Length: 310
Image (cartoon, rainbow, N blue to C red; front, side, top):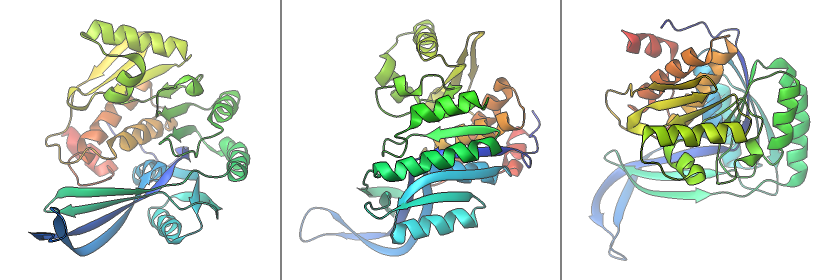
């Protein structure tokens, strides 16, 4: 399948952004204070995370990515804004002085994650109201809307956003979080991973049982489609016409963090080019196979997508 040109595709991404901060170093001894390794940090690297990583993935394909979110009025927010600008993302970041920007700090030695520390605060109601106002004005400039829910409070008006997008005839893709999927009712597509889907629908013992659960949830939430990403089992797309399954494309799995961001970003960008669901799923699966072979949150470029097909 040929990779389309994404140059005219416009994607609006809304959701919880975060800064992924990495401390890279070496471990040569155990602390005398407690039985834990001592990491001597040699390099610090910041990367976009959450909805910001979705936007970065959209932009890496060559599509126009507009990101709408909330950050704190702090150093991490400044770093995130600079990273997004460098990645070619048009970022509309609302600064909330009452919160700290969400940061996930990871200590890594010899390509192994030793520790993760999270800093997070939920945004204020007033800021979320201003985000909704921006959403209403920006949606008319988008071909596709992606709502990236990381459960950090940035999508407090998600039901209204879905309704507004539907009224504007814009496809809405949602990366869900938590146990209550009723707030995603009416979306075009949701993209839970296997464990997230199990948390909501319960376990299954066969493909037939999985399909029944997926189709029941799709109908209950009035979705056009439901995409379940299944790690080493690939991914499955459930629609009224039936199920379409794609096997794993990865040659070597190095790091699965951020793979879900890549999947929904690629799927959304493909839809924005006018591609059908089937092609969008196949390209998203191909992109996921690329990023899991890289350390940390990563992106897939059109050239890499072309090369993987060969």
